Each structure stands twice: as C-alpha cells, then as structure tokens.
Length: 325
Image 1 (cartoon, rainbow, N blue to C red):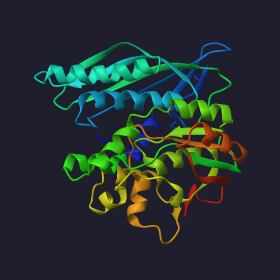
Image 2 (cartoon, rainbow, N blue to C red):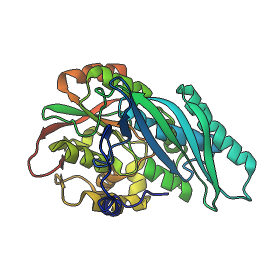
Image 3 (cartoon, rainbow, N blue to C red):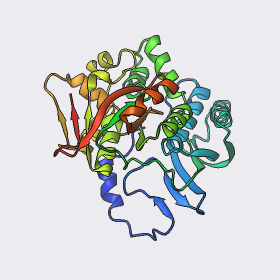
Image 4 (tube, one colour):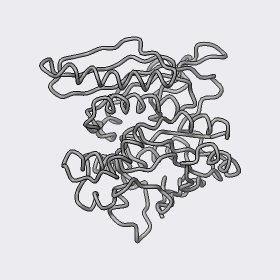
C-alpha cells in the first residue's frame, strides 16, 4: 500500500484551519517524522502513527516490520518511545492464527524496545493493514527535527535503500533469496542504536527515510532547513539486485508520486542512470535515518553505528534544494 501522493496531501493540509500553537514544538508544517508537544520545561511528548499492507509473507515478520517502522519515527526525533496502540484492518473471515502472529511479531518488537502495547483498535477490512501509534518522551530543548541542517554539515544514511523495489519483486515472484533476506534484515533493524549515536554526536537534523524515498525526505529536510543538499549517488548503499529489479520494472506508484512531489527542485548530474534515479525515489519501509551533523562528528557516529555511510554534504542554498552527482 503506497502513501497518498505527497503533493496532493500537501494541498489538503494547507486548507486546514489554524490551530493553537501553544506548547506545540513540532507540528505537521515541515512534514517531520513525529509531533512534539511540551508538557513541562523538562518533558515533551513525541507522537507518531503508521500502518500499511503486508511487506513480508511471514506474518510475524510483517508485525515486527510494522513496529520497527513506527518506532523509527520517534528515534528520528531523538526521543525515547514508551507506549504503543495497535491499528488492525483485517477481514472478518480471515485466518485468526495469522492475525495472532502479526500481533505477536509487533508486540515482541515493541517489548524489545522497552515499549508497552496498551491496546489498539480493529476494523473489518478486506485488505489487511497493520501498524502502531507510538508515544514517547524527549527533553523540549533536545528535539532533533528535519529543519536544523547547517551548511558545512555532512549527510549520513544509516541503512541501504531499495525495499520498495524488492517488495514489489517479491509480490511478482521474481526476487532472489539473497535480496529478499537482505530486505527483511534491513526492515527489521531498529533505528534505536543509530538514534543514540546521532544524539551523542550532536546531530543538527534528522529524518527517517520511508514512503517518500531518500530524495523525498531529503527534499523535506532541505526545504525546512533552507539549504541545499549535495548527494553523491555513488556513496548511497543499495540492497542486493535493486538496480536490476528496477530495470525489470519493479517499481511502485510511489516512484511517480515522489518525483511529482519534489518537482524541479532536484538537479541530477549527467551520467546517473534512470535506474539509480528510481532507486533514490524508491519508497522505503522502516528505512534508515538521514542525518545532518557537523563534519568532525561523522567519525564518532560511524564508529558507534558502523552501517552508517556519508552520502553528501550540506551547503548554502544555491537555487536547487538537492544536487545529485
């Protein structure tokens, strides 16, 4: 299940009435990963919600991925998740053992993160969907948003990309075991460790890479921070067989939606293949963190989270939000 086209959603959100901003630290205006609401001078709530159709044949794995995907929104803000509520859309005549395994996988992943599942809500739906609403806490002065990237920072990515293409190939029955296993490994890896590392390294900005793809979420960071992001496509780690699968047409609707979303704000250098461009737009499930932090802190971050790679740098705005070389 693809997200609603971000360009369409932005039009809808722009027509909503103005709300009281008192104690709102982060709302939906900058398309950040979670909302943040101040409770006191020492504590703020971090809240998010996410759910989607199956991304794995194993129901327990599906539940685990859904949990990780939701938790990562809290981690992207530098927060600590505490409680969760499950969201279940399931056919009334479906296999209840399957649903039980989905719920079990989700709860196990939540419990491993120290999060308690307090309950949830279910509806009869012919199309299965599952996810969580997660609530956490953070110090009001330590919130990491997508709006703090500074010229001179480096850009880091904590996971390889390509889950959208691989999951499409799984549904079509044309994916190899190595690619499928690597995809599941990526989707079930929590951002908790990377989040802690970026906080200690003094990150200026962060967003997790999910449905809008690497470039869609990078676009939101650049726009919110009023900077230009220079991305080196040769440094972006890819899951196995991603470019080959894209060449075979294993793309989601999100490829077009994400291109439409960023419009002409991105410039590609000549020589970047159309397959690589699609990989950069590929919608991700439980993707990695895209982090902007001071250059001299990159080594510390990579030392604590070894899968992290430097994929570019932040510069003063030059007329394009992103330059891809």
